[in-house]
Length: 311
Image (cartoon, rainbow, N blue to C red):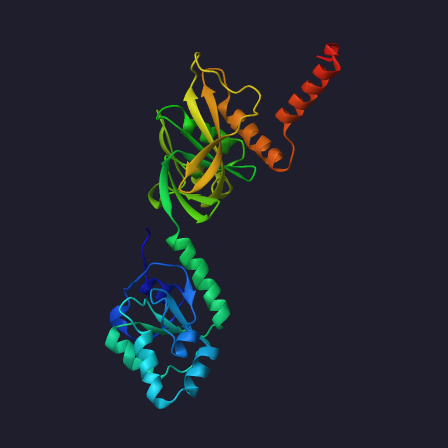
């Protein structure tokens, strides 16, 4: 699980640190944000203490109405040893009771001038991106006609050479050799390149080349949603390969299943062109045009009619 600290939010959103500086390096384990209105009323039975706590106009207005004897008690219970931070929105004044409780428990109290709802949305988006499940895959990721194609296969099968040919044909390289993948949603995988090898391609016999330097900024991109996996393998004469395209194989990455095609490699086959066409055909299928299905339906009609001359 990726690690995010309260300090990261403090720096990213340029927040003001009011108190509880000792806890600035507390870990944040969830992207969920809490607005503890019901806790302000005294109900802490299901208090999500592990979440970032946002106090806006509603919460602070209610707090001001509480009796003096209740205020310190509420803030004491709000500040726990696992609370990553309490953020005051709209630039409101921070209650003294919160400052005192946060110093005792080392809970960072931060302040922002942004509206509560807007800040909550920004924090959630940032944390979901940072805390998303991640993995790394050996392969090449290329943006082909807007389709993120992950090319996989054994070492030496020609993945990088194919990517180079695709770049020459006007497509964009995202990552070579190692693709870092994060699951941003239930069915959304986004691939990026490790910073060390970003924009680089390794071609055997030639060495490492910088794609952006050679082909320009339009030949690369920093990240891309993965929609299709193409597995390259050396041609096996004993193996039966799909000739119609009716069967759809799937590959599971983290918790998401992605369409997978297996393309056999042998001398004389232009793999770059085949992958390019596969990406275009994938787009057509998503638009409802399936050439293989249309062919088999037409074939069935001809067979049923008994008119074999059309074949």
